[in-house]
Length: 225
Image 1: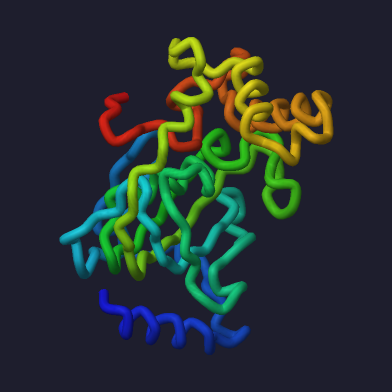
Image 2 (image 1 turned 180 degrees about the vertical axis):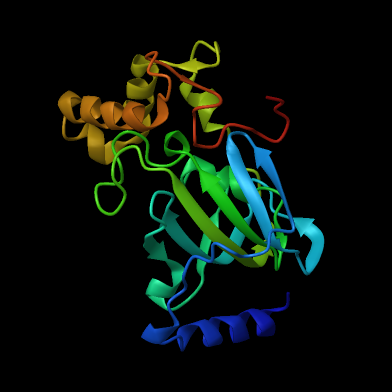
């Protein structure tokens, strides 16, 4: 998609009125569906350009709408900011379910992504709109894909003993090395950050974060998982 077309899409989105609120369509035709790492995906519209598909490190521009799976109440939308959202995948900036659900998507493709709580905001919620243990559904239509670079393998940097498990001690050491703002506040603040990370990442609650649980970058250019 050329830059002019992207600009036109952005302009159209910016003039949406309050009466044009996107609503969940239970009867939307599903072209086909599949599963990817615990996420169920319904394809509602085929892509217009599949010469490039989204991979880790790419920047996506998309319209998205998030709903509670229970009751289908909308809790967030790109329409709330009057323009499509842009985000990188494979960097851990989004919930696990969305990252997994958008891999290999094409420009113009629309997906309905069904995300279990363990791949969303888990047992603690997001502290605002999503309660603890909530399953989510996202309708996402991709407008543009900008090819990016594979992010550095952060998992490997944290996993000091290379056993493919991150312990609390390893996570604390990584924060101590890289999180200057946090470390200035002392060890208690580091412990609090580690607790928050493990509440989100340690899905099976075994005291470690494994490769599958880790939502940050975990595959380098020459890595095989």
